[in-house]
Amino acid sequence: MAEVDKPAVSQTENFSGKPRRRGCLGHCARFWWAYLIALAVIVVVVVPCVILVAVPKLAQQKVDEAQFEVDSIVVTNTKTQNLTMAINSVIRTDGSVHATIDAFQGVMYLEDIPSHTPFATLDFPQTTADAFQTVNVSQFLPITDVKALTVFNTWLLANESLRVTVSGDTHVHVRGISRAYPITFKKTLTLSGLNALNGLVVNQSSISLKPDAQGDNFFATVYVPNASPVTFELGNVSFHNYLFGQDIGTVYIDNVILKSGMNVYPLRANISQTPVVNALGQKDFCQGPNQGILPFVLSGKSVVNHGQSLPYFADALAAVNKSVSIDIGTPIKKLLGQSIPCSKNDTSS
Ligand SMILES: *[C@@H]1O[C@H](CO)[C@@H](O)[C@H](O)[C@H]1NC(C)=O
Ligand SMILES: *[C@@H]1O[C@H](CO)[C@@H](O)[C@H](O)[C@H]1NC(C)=O
Ligand SMILES: *[C@@H]1O[C@H](CO)[C@@H](O)[C@H](O)[C@H]1NC(C)=O
Ligand SMILES: *[C@@H]1O[C@H](CO)[C@@H](O)[C@H](O)[C@H]1NC(C)=O
Ligand SMILES: *[C@@H]1O[C@H](CO)[C@@H](O)[C@H](O)[C@H]1NC(C)=O
Ligand SMILES: *[C@@H]1O[C@H](CO)[C@@H](O)[C@H](O)[C@H]1NC(C)=O
Ligand SMILES: *[C@@H]1O[C@H](CO)[C@@H](O)[C@H](O)[C@H]1NC(C)=O
Ligand SMILES: *[C@@H]1O[C@H](CO)[C@@H](O)[C@H](O)[C@H]1NC(C)=O
Image (cartoon, protein in one colour):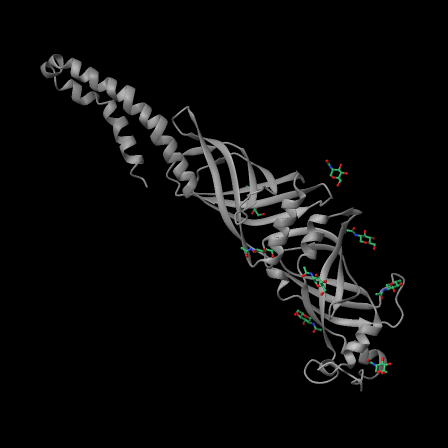
């Protein structure tokens, strides 16, 4: 919408219309009062209109039109009450206005929850209206609203995408005008979420009859996809391990830094043997295509990073039950030299 821009420029040019005045002589002398009124109108009405209405409107419009993209968010030094958040972002404009936007405090909230309760407040640096510029922010963040942060983490974990709004009030300085204009920087971006960890795989599993020193009797490798641009320092994560709705043990993944992309970690677990052996004897799992492959469900139990419990991650992981099929038959066969036979009195259909 450059139309607002153009009249503003042409009016300022007319205002300094010296060449015309030189050529008018008698006409000008006689109608000097008319010129004076016209000049007064320009000075009193048009210039303030441009400076007080058109420029701020244009400035706000340019800020509204600018594109704001987040390349990455990195959450580290996670503690119970605080963390460090780094955001690398890019602002794109058409580059038509030479302006500077003051540093400001911006809140971040989920656009699709009507309360718009902020889960983070970040200090954004001064920026210019250049066509392309990177804005990298890294800062210590006290957790002022753990519930809002937990809801954000839950949405990020559960959804394929989610809309996040960054909003803050600031001032813009347009080149050549000393006045600073108040504007609102408000951008809603669509972030990719972790999509309920779709594609998570547990394989290369092994079993020991006797638990090791830590009490673990199951070991495997877990492949955790993170489709979001967010990296999290989680620390030591544990999960309830359900089999047909029964809690049969605890799964541990240690020292987790969940990066954007595919993550591979060793997994260990302390699992009751009886329900597993019974399940392997059932008709569905002692034969056929799913032989030895049991449908476990993982649900977040605790997240502890260097002794600090992180409920804003643990509660998010507890809100999502993750189904994962694990091949137990292969390591059992390796261990016992044979598969678990179908039980004779299997009552499952
Ligand atoms: C961050 O939070 C932890 C508790 O979770 C606290 O011990 C520490 O002092 C806090 N750090 C700062 C700088 O406030
Ligand atoms: C912001 O971070 C990106 C990615 O890490 C980097 O390429 C870029 O140089 C940084 N920009 C600034 C202004 O620090
Ligand atoms: C995102 O996930 C949350 C938690 O599962 C759910 O309540 C919400 O409806 C989802 N939002 C969108 C936009 O899909
Ligand atoms: C385990 O799963 C990952 C991810 O799907 C795959 O890349 C890898 O080849 C698998 N390893 C084995 C031994 O099956
Ligand atoms: C986990 O390990 C402890 C200690 O070895 C043991 O007492 C407990 O029964 C185990 N739990 C399961 C579900 O196997
Ligand atoms: C997850 O599954 C367990 C066992 O079936 C159940 O008790 C729990 O309520 C489920 N949690 C969610 C969030 O669905
Ligand atoms: C995870 O737990 C182990 C002990 O089981 C501990 O040595 C390690 O420091 C913990 N890691 C983190 C990040 O808290
Ligand atoms: C089969 O039935 C017997 C007795 O009826 C019982 O003791 C046993 O636990 C059952 N086995 C399985 C795998 O359910």
